[in-house]
Each structure stands twice: as structure tokens, then as C-alpha cells.
Amino acid sequence: RMGIDGLYPLIRRLEISDEDAIFRVEEGPDFQPDGPFTVQTTRSDIRNVFTVLFAPRARTGDLKRSITCTPDPVDGELSEFATEYAVISASRYETTATESIEVPFIYDDGSAAIIASDQVRVRGFGFSTRSYRVSHLYGWIEVGQVLLLGSSYLKDQFVEVVGKRPILDGWVLLLAFDDDPVRNADKRIVST
Image (cartoon, rainbow, N blue to C red; front, side, top):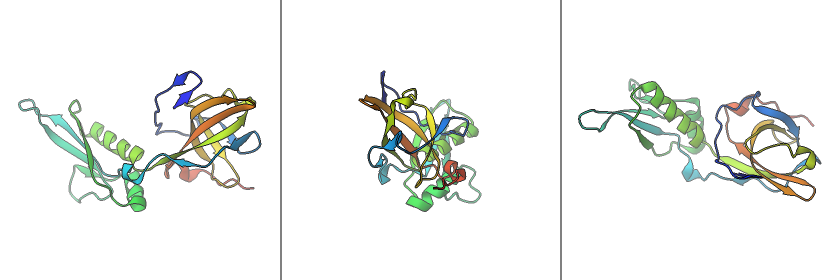
């Protein structure tokens, strides 16, 4: 993402809540869309099965443990578990191929499970961006800040500012819309 001061790392903030949103903004003449939604994730990027290989053996160095976040865990298999995100992602996109990573510095199941579930949460759904032309009154908004955006046709949802550039009569903000069905489920529908 980019801002006034140059490039910033794009960090996906998973635990965005009402407290993280700096304020709620409604689409209107001072905050209006400046183009279509652009999908940033392709179907081939979606992953709802993720395996973490961990706990290296002292003698050989090979990894002896694994844990898998999957929408369809095998009954009785302690190394597989399902999350809400894995199940919803599989219902939308079908079960994907397993992707795995090796993490030789982790030895406990809990840490490995968090890594696997967070990977499914981030990669099990896509995100899109849309630019907004905003008044100079919104010039204080910075890249990385979270807004609660409402409009007459969208549910209220959290968006992250991932780009900002000045224009003659204000600013253009690039907003990221995460497809997070669990987090966005409790946002009310804006009435017109």
C-alpha cells in the first residue's frame, strides 16, 4: 500500500472491531466512490485447508508433528480441526488443495493451531479494493486506519485505508474491503 510518505507494508488486521474504527462515514458528496470494486484475490489464491509441520526431532532434524485446519476433519484424528472460516470458505469455494509450511521453531500444538487457523482466515476468502474521492476535510485519515463505511446499498462494514493520494479538490483514498463473513455478520443494514 502507499501513502503520502511512500510505501507501507500491507498488514492484514484480523481482529478489527468497533473499537478499531476511528469513525463511521457514510457515502455521500464528501465521500464518494471513484470507480468500481477491484477484486484482489483470484480463486486459485483461496486456501481453506492449511497444514503446519512443526516440532523437529533433535537427532535427525525432521519435523515429527503436524496440525491441519480443514473444513472436513476426520473423526478421532487429533491433528485435524475445523474452524468457522474453513467451513464457510469451503461452502463458497469448495475444499481447496492443502498448503503447508514448515515451522521448526514451534513445539506446541496450540501455537501451530493458531498459525493454521489464521492462515485459513486470511487466505480462505478474498478481498477487494475501491477508490473513494473525498473532501479535503478527510485529509487527516491516514493509511492503515480503519473506518466503518456505510451506504444506501452496502451493509456497514469495516474497511482499511490502504492508499492515499492528494488531488486538486481533496483526496483519493483506496479502501480495502475484506470478505470476512463472521466479522461483518453483525453489522446492521443501513436504511435509506
